[in-house]
Image (cartoon, rainbow, N blue to C red; front, side):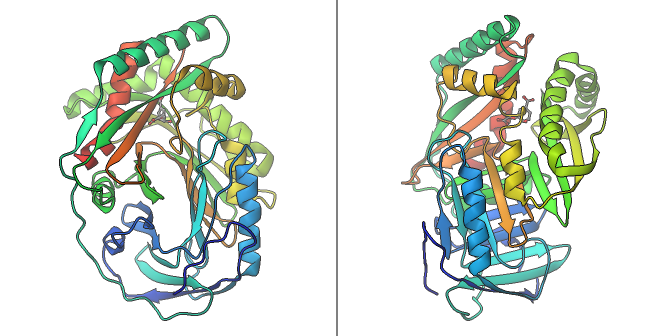
Length: 415
Ligand SMILES: C=C(O[C@@H]1C=C(C(=O)O)C=C[C@H]1O)C(=O)O
């Protein structure tokens, strides 16, 4: 099938989805090529490869530009979808940068394989109706000789940056800012990203394991899902590290749910999401108190916000309204984004930006790109990211330890 990359007017695409026998683990179907795409959650989801079309918007209108491009692709396509499940038919995978610079991408693959609730399908996308692809599985090569560069000097610098942020918050300049740090990994051989993906999906089945253009991870946070008019967002903010002792973790979970620092931080994040969704929704449900989400490395305060779409917004329009939520930016948003740019000393790239997929109807799922890393173009290195919400009584040492805990999933997957 021919590969066509367009950064202008989309070419007409011919799309066909048909049901298939269960092909086994979706991630195992990915070829060892850098165009592998993944979005999986507890065994369900979609994987893809090849590039039928792609688009790389930048600037602060990157979401709107992507939405317009997608509308043109959909308009120009002929779709025969015999499956009609979320993720079947024409889809694009995408990853957006946190800030306005370059690096955002939407890719329409040539082949998509999906599973949902026991039903499986394959979608082919191209300039003409091609033959159905032969699906085969292969075992990825594990990373070798991984080294992590996490120098004490850089850790101290980050703790000093947290301290500076606390002072600015205490002076009344803003309420909350999320500060991130990075750790670089290097490998003896070019990384086969399918290996960390498989490890992440198996260790964190309740998270969304993703890969788009070298950006991969397993995020617990759903920025927004739009499905058949129902809007859902899972907001996380307020974190405690797990100790490995279940009884102790349970009592820590109880203290997390009572901690005024964490509840305050959480409230900011829930408010920012509810306010951003309100203009698009009726019948919104914003629970008054959070639940505790247990992950193998950390526990989070979590709130699921839901609503019914009342306008014709597609999921990318909702993403545009939501990003950056206070879970990854801060409060007030504009002040937090300015303070991040001033003091963080880090190019976040796609970290903490929206990552996910959109379908022809405008439905889709976009997580926040957390617990993640960006692989270098030569695949001999990767940059891991983690951040923490800083409020007036944050302690730099605790935040450093929290960021370390948030680095564990990708660190383990690459070791
Ligand atoms: C910023 C990250 O996580 C975010 C910050 C959290 C917090 O400060 O408690 C919790 C979950 C996420 O919303 C990250 O994982 O890098």
